[in-house]
Each structure stands twice: as structure tokens, then as C-alpha cells.
Amino acid sequence: MTRIITCACGHDVSGADDEELVSGLRQHLTDDHPEMNVPDEALQAQVSAQARDTD
Ligand SMILES: [Zn+2]
Image (cartoon, rainbow, N blue to C red):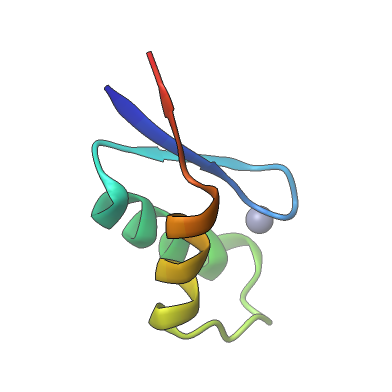
């Protein structure tokens, strides 16, 4: 099973669990949205609220 979350820009980040989604999203923000300064708590909340399972 894979977890996936879509960034506000439309970029999909996937991982084995929510922890990987948080770190993957962090990496994506660093790469593509360096102007954003999002705290870890906000990333975790976003993952909790929006992450979904894929096959
Ligand atoms: Zn993005």
C-alpha cells in the first residue's frame, strides 16, 4: 500500500506511510517552494487531513 498526498501546486508526493509523506513533502517544499516556511506541525496536519491510500 502506498500513501499519497498532492501539494497545492499539483505535485504528488508518495510514501509508505505518513512519516514518509511528511519527509517527502518537506523535500518537495525545499526543492520547489523554497520561499515557503512551513513548520513540521503544519506538514503533519496537512498529511493527516489530505493523505490518501493508493493500490
Ligand atoms: Zn508543490
